[in-house]
Picture 1 (cartoon, rainbow, N blue to C red):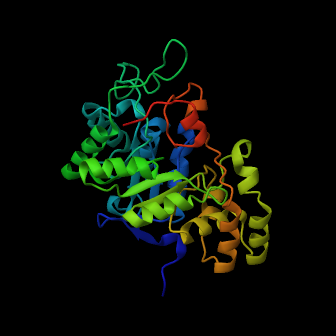
Picture 2 (cartoon, rainbow, N blue to C red):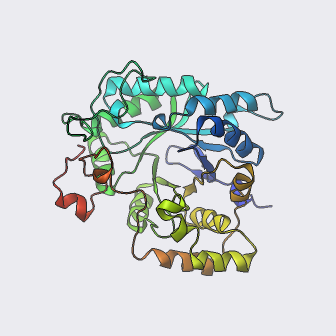
Length: 335
């Protein structure tokens, strides 16, 4: 009997495995995320995506503490992802960031640890921050204060040390381009296990997927529904082709999108704090080749809903995605 789609795992290039279905926790409020993780586990989800910047890892840890009392719960069956934030990229601060995450989650290792963004913020002491460093240091003009001397190669070397120590079972990156990953590989000889990026039917990441496949790098898709309605949810979750496929298969639009991402080879992180929605999103199924290709065709003109960091408030004056707009703006390179 074949493994249900939602319970499948992908093999990483370091031999570890990642569940293809996860639960995103970004923008989940502390009083909501604990219940969401518990609900996710009870519906069969074993992959939980966290990050230092989300400021709710302690509440995720509370959920794991609650679940530890459930029959059949084992830490080794749970796959926890976390990410070091941009202001903790200096090697001496990478370990601090992970140790704070481990403390908050209540575990002695992380399954996957990622460099959250290819952008180096200045490391400014901040006693009010859990790990002692300001997450969003700003310049007098309101822009994000950058570390202009640090190379992400040094950050990556610190990540490799965490893997060697066993504190992180696998290490990887998030929001990285092929060129940025190549620089890491060229200068260290070590290939990231994962690249986590925004990916959905209107941003199917074909070029990046081709590159990562050639390098044996697994891709994880965040924002698989295009984000909330104010971002791209109305264009992705509310897409007419998605609705047609949902009606034809007797499924919900979210289930179609999750199934598309899994068939594409991604692990996928639908985010919700509503138990009924979490359970529904977990009902992935084997999408037909015809329906899959119809959804792939929607991404001919890539549409990014997460935005370009140099337009954020505060603005990150860094060339993150290497788009024509970023190249034309004379932004700093993160290497």
